[in-house]
Image (cartoon, rainbow, N blue to C red; front, side, top):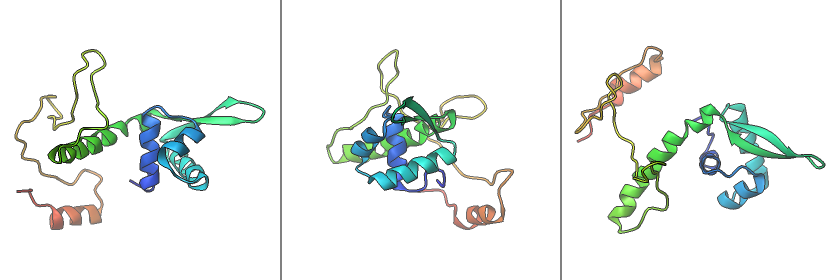
Length: 150
């Protein structure tokens, strides 16, 4: 989350993953001020999520492109869209964005997958465990806060 910084970083990353790369397009799509957009682009670049590429000289103009690390953020975006769509559907509203298989055109959705077998887990009973690099506060959070949702 620190790599995205705030909601503006999230919205800008969304637009970059949708293929917008130019400053003016990013500003128009998000409605962010020029100063905030410039600052968030610098933060996203510093965190390794995007890279700046010059596409014009005299004057110099740049486009902003997701790095491989930034492209991985598409999973987060897809998850957020999927949750939003679920609740929009309950209000009889359509989805503003769909993720589809480029070959078949069929809709895609994220779901729990067994990390070893690659099989989709149905009716999952998910719990969390501290990872090998969990610090003391993460271990406390898990021990203190995690409850299986009912």
